[in-house]
Amino acid sequence: MELDLSSIPFSRFGSYLAFSLLAEDDSHPAGLYLRSVRGPATGGRPMQEILQMQLIINNQPLDFTTHATFTCLSLTALAGRADLCLPSANIVHIRLSDAGLRFHMPAGDYDNIIPGSEQTWQLTVNTIVETKLQFTPLKGHIEIDAPWQAEHSEYITITLCPDSDGAGEFSIEEAAINWPGSATALSFEESQRRVDAELNAFIAALPQVPVQYADSRQLAGYTLWSCAVAPQGHLTRPSIFASKNGMIGIWSWDHCFHSLALADGHPDLAWAQFMAIFDQQDQSGALPDLVNDRLLSWSFCKPPVHGWILLRLLHTSSLLTIERLHEIYPQLERWTNWWFNFRDSDADGIPQCNHGNDGGWDNSTVFAVRPPVESPEISAYLVLQMDFMAQAAARLGSFSQAAAWTARADALTTRLMDHFWRANHFVGVQVGTHTDIESQSLLLYLPLLLAKRLPLAVRESLIARLKTPGEFLTSFGLATENLKSPLYRSKGYWRGPIWPAPMLIIIDALMACGEIEFASELRRRFCDLVNGSGMAENFDAHTGQGYHDFHFSWTASIFLTLAHEL
Image (cartoon, rainbow, N blue to C red; front, side):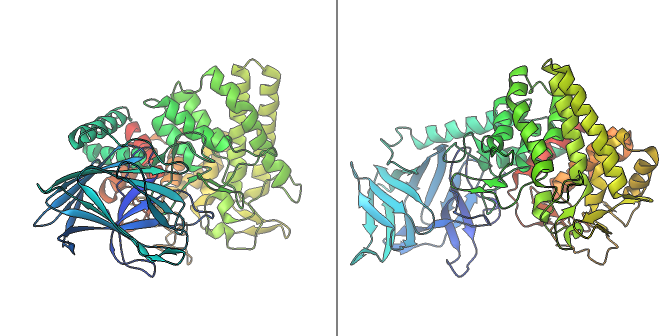
């Protein structure tokens, strides 16, 4: 399967390097770039381009095309070519045939290149992102053009040149702190076989899916494998980034969905995803909003979906051993209590969101009023979190704690209904004014996760609306804003597009409510959507067109989970 490098980067498990075709903007011309996904100092969607790449002959650039499979990137021109693979997390292996390969960057004040040992050259990049790249000739030689202007280079150009027979092999080794040691001794063919075998083994252990989704299973597998980075800095375990395009990091609900997809075939990696966020838990119980190797962001949080995911894992996999229950129990207890201790400013027993980001639905119409906002799905998640704590406590032999958690869950369910239910629908509530927020967001249907904890009439009312064509239901799944809402936007982020996480949540809720046929139909529609539109961040509710980011790892994990259930 060939990658479109303008939307899906070429990378591999563990690596902080990625290759992308970038359009022209104010910071760079259009072209193929070697990029770094080492975390920036702030959140956002950085592209982190470092070096533009160009095939050359006799010092002249060639017109070339790029072709990328999951494990090999090729630059081809009429007169020559270059092939690249990533045999390990920090090594790029390059093979040249009848052409050279040039890397170029405009240098900032603290970017520098120096000669190393054994004909290597060592590039320190500081302006765009902090990283080090060591260029080593295995066959051929390296030419450097980096004119020094008083105290820094004007620009840096690195040219990999083949031998007189037209053949060349080189390695690029990446490091965050110290220069790497000796370069790879493998041939390019051996490097290629190594990475092929690694990816094939990774994909083979993923959940099986119906035959019509076989290609999408491969793409989902590549997405998860290539979005992973090695432990470093704030990342204590191998971690699957949201993307290696712009969403560089792990957000504290995305990681849960990876645990679902990986639980059976890659249990240690699944647990690493779940715990990587909890490794950074504050003493207060708070979880960071975002973590990457260089950044811990506490500006927001994400919804407490963790107990619901753990309940699924407890009953559908063998991931949650007694040892792992002992590990997560005290941390999940602190996370649960944090919502009542630090997100309940009016002390009414109903936790709040201080921004739409806290609920994970950044610009949902529930948050169109000034926050803080009490949104019913947060309390629903916490009920399920308490239910998990009760079951975990029982398995750990603490039956008094189990009973206490169940009592808390029962009480919160009662408060939720009293606080948010109006006649035949849920509302949000603005903290301070205690004003009802009448929104047409799908967010207000997520309490269906409570299933038989809710009165039958409540379930029937919500499900009937979800089944009504032309409101939330489309041929591709469920829109995040009612299609008839004046605030619906086709490309409105959480105000219209279909998102993977709500689809999984609603499908799980419907299954728990006994709506098997409707759940199965939604599952099929979503899997067909991904099968046709790829691993996009979200999708147009009317057309199915993918939006924003096509290398989105939670889409891959949720697709694998739902397709396997089919």
